[in-house]
Image (tube, rainbow, N blue to C red):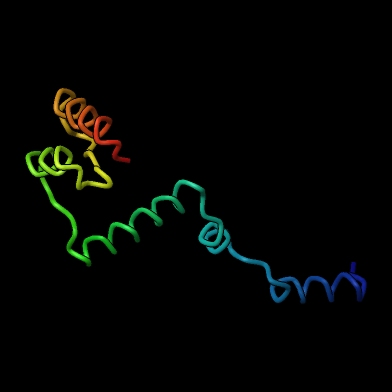
Amino acid sequence: LKPSCHQARLAQDWPACGRQSRSEAMAKKQSKASKAADSINSRLQLVVKSGKYTLGYKTALKSLRNGKSKLVLIANNCPALRKSEIEYYAMLAKTG
């Protein structure tokens, strides 16, 4: 059985008609979580480049008490008591 001219032409044009591999399609489609992570990473990179950041528990509490902090990032493995204390100070200072 020979395919008709129309079928043969469709089969030949198929790779050229913009068909993407699965990995290319997945690379173009980013989930909302990965876009948010990219946004956070790029903003964090900008802050580190400017030099206006501090690291550590004690300096975080000092900046919260003085009202100079705008954002506090807490690690996942931070002890619960320490985390609740930082959150309490952040709430009092109205920090995001």
